Length: 281
Ligand code: PAF
Image (cartoon, rainbow, N blue to C red; front, side, top):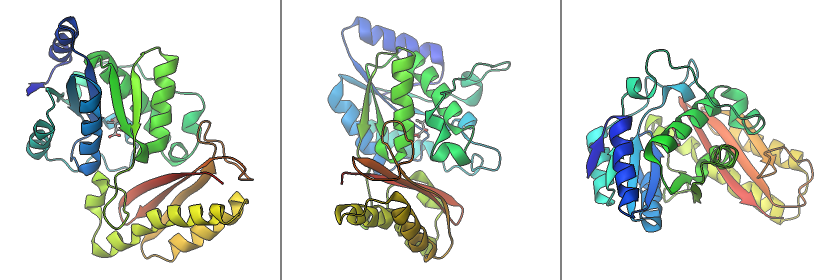
């Protein structure tokens, strides 16, 4: 497995692979890999002849007072896991390689970031759109795989891919959960045992919201307020948002008549966790 630290080495390798008739699938990560990331790699490996994984904790997608400095990392372990998944190359740049002195170009989307996580993380999707565009230009993949846990991120990247004509096949992969339902996340590492129990409030909220819709509840407000009280009954939780929205535009809905996205973000101790489910009435 090749490890590239510069954009030029990475791109040269990708270009030579394409010249040799190979196709490239790509899984960008911020490292500290868990089974969710590994499932993205399996999906990627099944799509193309060569899988590339990147590890880069992207500073521009963290706001001030967020957990950039605390973000967990274990590069040696990550590299072993990536190799075991059969990746052909890893892109492992440092911060200066991606954002050299006098860096000044950022990508912003007009509408999608004005919902859900974008409301309390105002610079987040600008940072995501910028790094993902740069990685697409460096790795030049034919397909790229992103987890559906970050549903809004997946929609932002689909939009970016269309708007900027990257022409990449963007694949959304299902959420991977622990056996008790908790969605896998690198940030679960912040939870102590009591907070780990409280974190179950997210996946349970998704199931409860689905049950309410299937039982005929049409009022999004009734569901939001029921779920808010439910989450607040768990210690050490603070609801950031509970959204019931159109899966494409992310606009909030009032009446549930067609498929909706139920999505939520909850601060549990020092971990900000997200989860979601698509629900058909
Ligand atoms: O989902 C993530 O881990 C990150 O947001 C991504 C896509 C690797 C960009 O930094």
